[in-house]
Structure formats: structure tokens, C-alpha cells
Length: 388
Image (cartoon, rainbow, N blue to C red; front, side, top):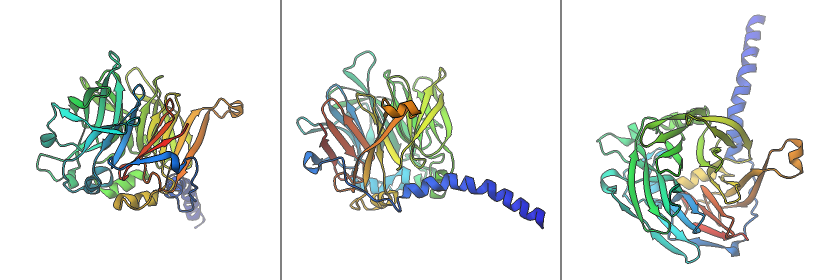
């Protein structure tokens, strides 16, 4: 009997820390005891652009100050959103738009050489990258969770997810389709970070399976998401796997790749290798789940935070339900703390109960013009704030 209890206690000594490792961040991320405090934004300096709804990802073009948005409709998101296991056929109304803050002009970009009716367009993550040859030419990388056209049931086999590559000119109103990249490593893509050649990109797989809420719930408790790499001329591969809820992704000018670990409450940093695989450098903790990432002109990484994940889940079912948001910044620590080994300065720069920017999944900062933009996959409007 003594030996049996010894084995039991030995097993508990192993199992309890493992359970705590995975469940503690999830319990924290749910926000049960979190008290939202409105700060950092002045309502009178913010405006709402009601014409732009359900834009999961937004990207700033630094030179012109234009904002590029990957948008849908609230009705479409409620029916078709593979990331939360929604596969009800929806009207094909997704689009890419630009918004000019200086004039408030909205332009829906026309697709050229792309048959959206035949191929389907269901946008999510996006990146906009100036060409290495001509900075006025832009490459647009777009996650497309296409509904299946082969007769298979998407709710069983998943969406026919691909990455689309387009090109445009800064301020232009046409997206010229270059290529559709489809590969077995593109499983459940969430976001994308492109290169300036219009061919190469990294992307995150939020899940390791295309369908099944039980499988997805298991994924939240395990390390089965990944970052993939593609060269549209040579194919794709997994660049790093066994990640914990990989979500937003962005790439710095020095080559560092940043990945948001949503349930891990962490910004992960990776170094690109000669074979395009990624090697983990380090992770920086914050106190809420984070979604999409962006980098401003000064090199600061911005992450959209979700203080109350349960409210966000309700928000995906009823977009009128307010979901509090916040924004985290990650930058090199040049203050006194760096002397004590604090390499990075992590700050929550604003928090909102949802009145200004409910359910924001992306926060973008225009450091040059003093503007902050927020939007989300189920948000009713684009929020623009003056932050000079």
C-alpha cells in the first residue's frame, strides 16, 4: 500500500505542474476577476467610421498614411468564420479597402485577374509590403478561407484555406492578383507576414486541424499550432511547430519575426535561419491574451489585447455585446531597468470597456501623424483616435 501511494504522489507531482502550466494562463485569460479600467484614450479625440465593419486585420502604409483593411460584413462573419468553427454558406461580400484619415475617404479595391465568384473570398489576416524594386508598388498578402467548391462539406473537412498574393500601387484602387498559394502546411491560417519580393511569406496556423471544436479546445491546452513559410515559386513548409496558440505575426526590418501566443499571454520572438526556418529567441509576458500585431515607425510592437475573453466570445455570437479591449506595446528597454536585466519595456497604453472599440483584434499606431487605429473581426466600426 505504501508503494501504491508513493506512485500516486509521484504521478501527482508530475501531473499537477503540467495542468497548472496550461490551465493557469487560460484561467487568467478568461478575465474572471479582471477589472477593466478606462484610460489612455480621450473619447472626444476619437471618431468612428461606421461604413467599415468586421475588419479583422488593418495595416498602415507608412509613406502615405493610408490604412488597408481586410473586411467582411457582420452577417457574413456570423455565418462563415472557420477560426470559430462556423461553416454556414454566406454571401460573398468580403473585400479589401483603404481608408484615408486626412480626407475620410473609403475606397473598396477592385480585384483584377481574380474570379471571386469562382474561387471565393473570405478574408482574415493580411499584410501590405512595399516592393523592394519600387516602393510605390505594394504587395498584398491575404489569408483566404475559401468555401469549398469540390462538393465536400466544409463543416467536416474544413475550409479550402489559401494565401492570395496581389499587387497594387500606393493609393490605387485596383488589386491585381498574382498567385494563389495552396499547400498542406496551410492548415488553419490566421495571419501572414510578407516579404518585399511578392513571393515569400510567413503565416501562423492557429490550430493543427481544420475543424472540430473538441480538437480546437484540445489545441488550446497543447502546443499544436505553428508558423509556416512559403515561397510561391518553390512551395511551403513548417518553419517552427509545437507553438502555443500562435495568432498574429509581424516581421521587423532586422528580420526578427514576432508571434502572438494568445492563450500563452506572450509575445514570442524568432530569428530567421538561412533555410527560412525559425529559431526561438525569447518570449515576453503580458497580462492579457493578445491577437494581431503591428510595428510602428519607431520599431515598437503593438498588440491588441483581450482583457475579458469570455466577453469576446459572447461578442462573436452577438456583435452588439461589448468586449473590452486594450493595447500592449513592446519595445527595447533603455531605462534604468535595463541595468537589472529587463531587456524589454512592456506597457498597456490604453484600456477601454468596449464603448470606443469593442472587440478590437488589431491596433495600429501611426507614430508620424499621431493616430491610433482599432478594428476587429466583429467590430461595428473602425475607431480612429488622435494621440499626439
